[in-house]
Length: 264
Image (tube, rainbow, N blue to C red; front, side, top):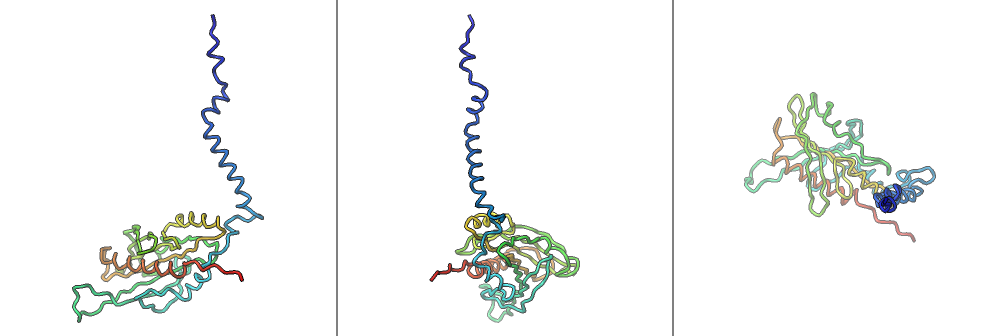
């Protein structure tokens, strides 16, 4: 006797495939429907959402930065100028202050001065993307002949009451052994990072609200006290303190969203 029960109960190949992959197929179908449904909103009149999104409310203030510079509490600004570095136009703002004396300093001790240079390049148009080649600041002769670099690392800074941000640190020195530390990052309202990809995802979210995420490229140049000095706790304290001050001024000033206009 031939038993046909096995062949009669076995599902067809198409049914078997559907049973094994049903959840995946449903997920793919749902994602496809979402993509097709959002496409008309993303492309309208031949313009991508990137092109149609409005300017950030901070844009007018950001455009004034190259002319006015940034007032840093406790620091005096010298002559502000513009410099072309790495193919980009930067605000060049030398600043200095009397170095705070430690608890063990004598009252008659000669006051030392801290000097640094603040470099700023804000977005100029609502569609501008952060595209600075940080490595372009590591070469050339803008600080002197034979510029070299080492000690590249990324620092995480956490200003009080503000979102943390990250910055790229390098040591630079010339053939004459003039030595500097350079700290660079993009600042935006929710923090900052030297990697433009971190800005990109925030800007994608802003575009769904018909806007863009404003940004400012920042570099801080700190000369060392002695030629070929190494990065240590002293320089870390001075440079990170200044960077956090700059970030705080940017986030509470030029990068602070403008109040919405009230229709009357």
